[in-house]
Image (cartoon, rainbow, N blue to C red):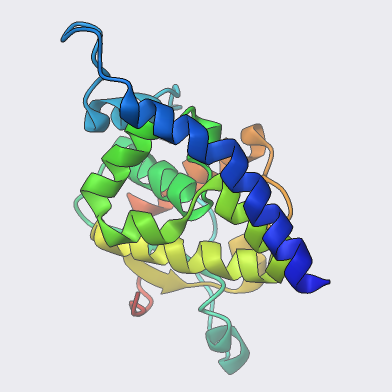
Length: 215
């Protein structure tokens, strides 16, 4: 039963995606003017399509706490990022991009084959290993939401680490004030944007006093 479900989902995904990809590869551009935009420019356009608030209007989440052994055991799940030389706008762009890649959700940001090619060109194996929306659906059906949440955490850590951010641990309660988990569904966009704004505020704010964690 398990094998039939997995194979059935994979076959359906391939039927829907392979022909379109083949057509894109076979059809040459009509002219230089009509050629597809450069992948990097396409990806950048998608990722900045959002009006950022003034960071002065946001409330910095609480980060101070005294860790217990139980807290430290959960730092692989509850953490945040910080980089010393980054602005709020830069941090938000980085976090939003890594969130999209980690969730396998470039489709929600309007990504197409050119945008995904740009991500692959920039991140190489990292982007290839993160997976697509089709891969996310298969993972949800086969492994369940817990595996998807773990996959997202690992991918997010890899992406933000690649961009030069350090990781710091939090308690579960403090983490939930400005973070979210996903499995069997995508977070509502308004709630997601609010959380990402606060994550960017933290990432570009004062350097944390707690110890850095390995990515």
